[in-house]
Image (cartoon, rainbow, N blue to C red; front, side, top):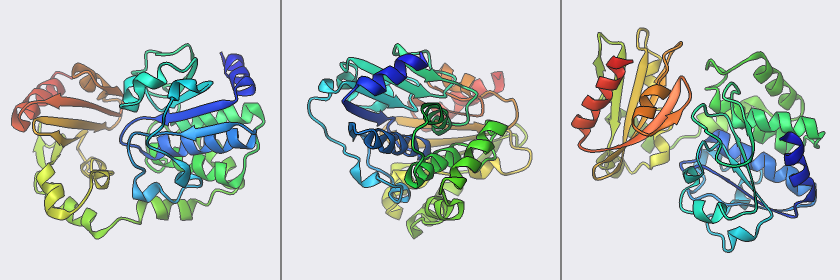
Length: 316
């Protein structure tokens, strides 16, 4: 399959790159690295995402070239769908993307069932960025400073700063190679993790007031409501990292963050320690992800939703 992907890259002229809604560092870093590589090969390339780029990722090289509206998507020769376990995850343009003659999916989610013929899937990989790093090395692509910066940001964020169980020897080797290629760990980390507006801190103080502990303090949950965002002037992107806060507490095995998406719709983000598989919980609610990090969307009143989720947690 790699040979077919390399052939598509070689023969294609016009490329579309997209990723999932609610963009994170892995999706953006991977998109931008692939964009720069294809541009270096003389290709016509466009990155189109449904959602805007979060402020703390706008520093990434080539981020200013991302668009959010695009006509005649089906006319592109090749479409890359990155960091998505399902095509629907790209949002409102998914139907148009599906019409592209050659689709290539690069992803590392365990819930990915393979929605297109050409794909690179590895649930054991730390990130989509690591998979792209492997592909580029196999292609002997020119690893410029900007490409290395984007790939390093992708790997850094999806490993939680190299803390998660998905961080393997190959992951660290890749990161080290990217640093040698020009990626600046301190500069990248400062831009991603130390550039938040005051409104995020104020939002966090409100969200922490919703913290509840269950199962003899083995699980923790928090809720972000639309009212919280309105009162603090914060945006949805400012909730990034909130779920990791309760997971830092000793004894807590599962952390949950309920984020209001509509009047009676919430996104549930799940994080766990060790071998506790929260992807199985998300799957019960038509979601997915990884063993230690998963998500889903649930409709209903928040207290009823929390009760249903806790039943699934207890069963696990």
